[in-house]
Length: 434
Image 1 (tube, rainbow, N blue to C red):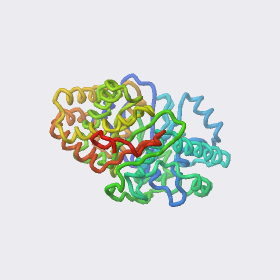
Image 2 (image 1 turned 90 degrees about the vertical axis):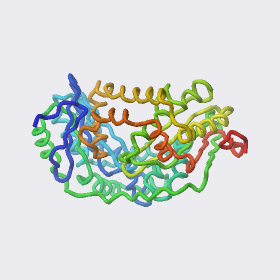
Image 3 (image 1 turned 60 degrees about the vertical axis):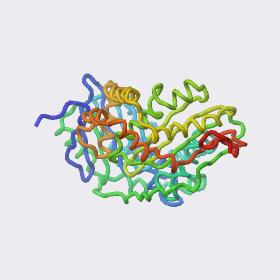
Image 4 (image 1 turned 30 degrees about the vertical axis):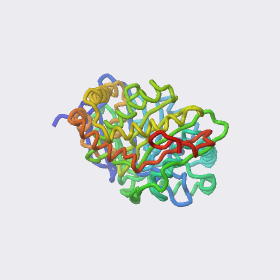
């Protein structure tokens, strides 16, 4: 069988000691290479009393590994014209290397060192802990990050993996020792339920050979399963956080939502794009930002993950205008459930989404993100080739039905964070003062 060369099609190769290996061809003419390890090491796995473990470990694995200390690793990457990046989420953690395609084996070797043999040098641990503490302070005092944290706390019950932002608390951060970090790495940077995704012109046999040689140090183990309890109806419909001295109020309206593989996801995805996912085109941008001039930003997100998700409609407004923004966000979410989206509006949004796919093939890094998404969610190898057809098949009535499930404001929470001293006078859902 001919090996796939279209970057929109991935190839699932032979596993390496339980580690799934996925190959993607780079965009035509691309001279760079990307590889990502993604595994079950997100902050949903943080041990009780050791919150912050996942983020701290994810930061430290790219600091020093194998024979390289922090400075030596940075110099080696610079010599190769390469970069290391990382990302942590509730369910998973990622480490990505990017650089010249001609150095793909050397770069994959560095990725293997980072994933399998991080050093956790004491000086790096101290530095990372200080940086984490700074992020905790920003989260507590900046309206945008504080609003998101309070919203997640209101939506999800204690011990839910989506409830926190992974930064932990000052107390849990102090309690984290190097031994704790080493243990978390050993238990969660495993081969079981993990993926190695490579975007490279190298042929499949060569990719399999290199993966077996470099990642054979993995034990074929599986991390403990992530516990995801159902999200019940929130106990409150509003939360306010007064942050004196700030000039901006951040407003969030949101609730629990569907998983990435839910059957209604394509229609729910389009519903979110109509609401606030498309810059310039979306309803929230047009009504709140463009016509109303009431917000610095207005948008929405549908965070559909492997086991569930949440949605957010959001805006940032001045201290003298935010009360007018709240009912607008609520009304636009309700309108998706109560009214069928007009065909012209849906078609504009649909074509905008489909038109972005070729743009993702302009660079290896962006094309690689598509492959990582397919691999992580265990989607079919031709997922991005068939995605436009699935979007085109969605009818306006299906968008309305999916919005009622995935963007259900009847079980949502509204959060205000900023100089909101008189938040008790916030607008009711119909726009009247309480």
